[in-house]
Image (cartoon, rainbow, N blue to C red):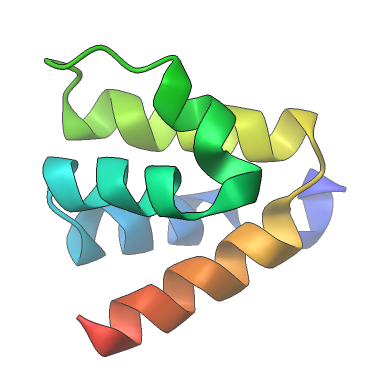
Length: 77
């Protein structure tokens, strides 16, 4: 599944489009991404949040919905 998505582009979009706190809120606000939020520590940095999000999306085969949500939220910000 991941071969259909450019992980580098998704990683760059997440990194450029969100602060660490907004990225955590993004994970909290999306029911399918709440498990990512639940395993983050309060002091988790943005790079680690992005990594955890991409890893979870890969494991759960959520790249399609994650990419769409990321783009949608990036355009609104």
